[in-house]
Length: 326
Image 1 (cartoon, rainbow, N blue to C red):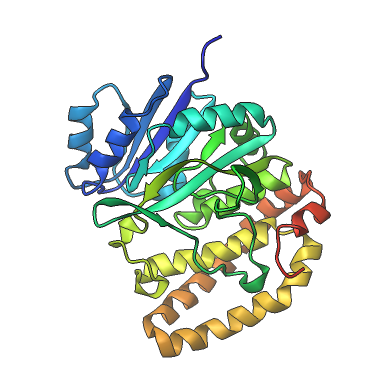
Image 2 (tube, rainbow, N blue to C red):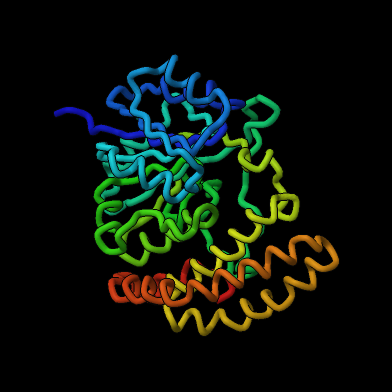
């Protein structure tokens, strides 16, 4: 019996600073049944020349412009042939046994659609022992549990996984696409598209798991000059994040839970402009821009919501357990 094929979809956009190390970590995987699909979003640096000259047998898709994370990854997923898929940004360095460990784990978890591993900081050119934890959740105390893999057990259920290097089951992705017409929602462009996918996975009755048996390193925010703080990022990026957060809420959260969460969500939204006014006035324009786009998108978002909620397999009880404070 042959080992399953694993496709690594590597998304690049002017990633010359990290591309050689990232590609080396892919090439050095101990697992042999690999194909690599490189998607380039309109790079104008030397990153693609470096890759093509070093790895001519990899598969390349080149877009003239930056079409965003969601659409870029979708284009790579269209041609990836693997039974499992690894989604990768250029600022990620995989442990050499990452794919091998994930394949072994997924073989034992038949309803696992996604698997995540510990995420450590790749900082100042060094692979550190510093765990990269997610920032404060925008659901405040109703934050989703299980995103971090530091859980005290080698493998445990999780609501979602890190979007930096998720290990995904092809069967699950195909099912999601049949329902929605896409894997990542291209309306997101970038930001929160992974959270949207985790919700859709869970609502369809697939499972996510976190493991400590392997790991990878991530720079984070490489496409925004490694600016980690939200208010330090570009206003375009801030607007996408604030808009996409509401896209996730409006599309995915079942009505009873949405009613329960609404007071807190609305209070937070009311407080945000005042916070920006005093802390980061330029972010106020991003907030206004995000709501302009949300209002324009309401008809399409609610059509997507109708499809998602109609096909929901997970009970409300099992959804609520992922929230703290309920």
